[in-house]
Image 1: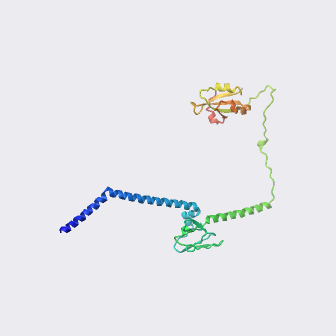
Image 2: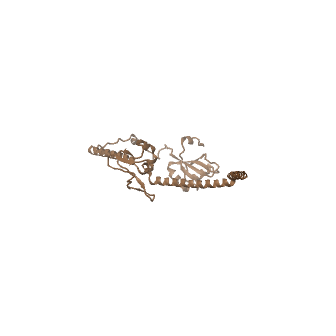
Image 3: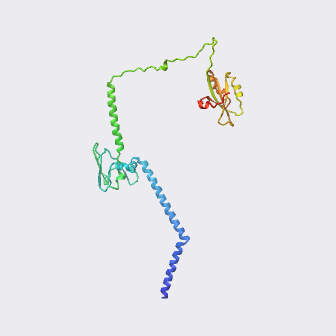
Amino acid sequence: MAAGTRSNSDKRDECDYVVAFLKSDEFSDIIKKIVSKETKLLQKQIADLETDIQILRQSNIELVKVLTDKSYIQSKSSTVNNDETTVFPITSVSYADKTNSGKTSSGQTLQKRITQKIISGEEILVHKNKKNVAENINIETSSLERNIGLNIETSSLERNIGLSQNEDWVNVKRKKSYRNNKRSITGSCDSIELKAVPKKSFLFVSRIRPNTDKSALKAHLVQYFPEAEVEDLTSSYPEVYKSFKVIVNQTSFEDALDSSKWPSGAYVTKFLLGKSVAAKVPVN
C-alpha cells in the first residue's frame, strides 16, 4: 500500500508540475515564439504567392482575363467535369505550358492533357479535365469577333468607294453670307468742324505699391499718353498691392503694352472684367 501510495503521489506531483509549467510565463514565451515564427513564415509565403500572381498577370494578360471573368465561362454554358468534351465554335485556340524551369512557353504540344484540332471555319473539340482547363487553355474569342467585324466594315467601305467612283460629282457653290455684304468705315477728314470721339482701350494695371495714389500713376502715364485716365480698383489684397484701370486711345494701345513704360514688377494686361464685375468698380 505504501508503494502504491507513493506511486499515486508521484503521479499527482507530476501532474501538478505539468499544470504549473503550462501556466508559467516560460511556457507562454515559448508558445509566443513558435506562433511568431510560424506567422512570419506564412506571411513570407503569402508575399511570394502575391509576387507570383503579379508576374503571371503581367506575362499573360489574356490568360488572366479568361480565368477571372466568370461571366465569360457562364456565357459559354460549359461545365467542367473529368474527361468531358466541350465544343467551342471558334477558329483558333492558343495555350501556354509551364516547363520545368518555371518559364512559360507557347506552341508546345500537350500530348497527355490537351488534344486540339484547329480547322478554319469549323468547330473545335477540346478534351479537358477539371485540373488543366483553367491553366492551359486560352480561347481568344474577343480577338476573333473583332476581326470579323473589321472584315465586314472593310468590305462595306470598299463597296461604297466603288459606287462613289461611278457616280457623277457636281460642284455646289456656297452662298455668300449676308454679313459679308455689310461694310463699315472710319472717318479720316480733319478739315470739318464736326469732331468724333476716339475709341478707347482699357488696361488692367496691378501689383502697384499700396501707398500709390492714382494721381501719381496718371502723372507718370501722361508723359507717354496725354489722354490717359486712371481709375481705382478694389484689389484682392489691398494691404499688399493696389490695382487700377487705365484708359487710353485705341491708337495708343500697342504702345501702352511696352514694358519700359511701366514700373518694374507691375502687371499690365487688357481689361477683361465682365459687366457684373465692372458695375462694382467705383466711378470718379
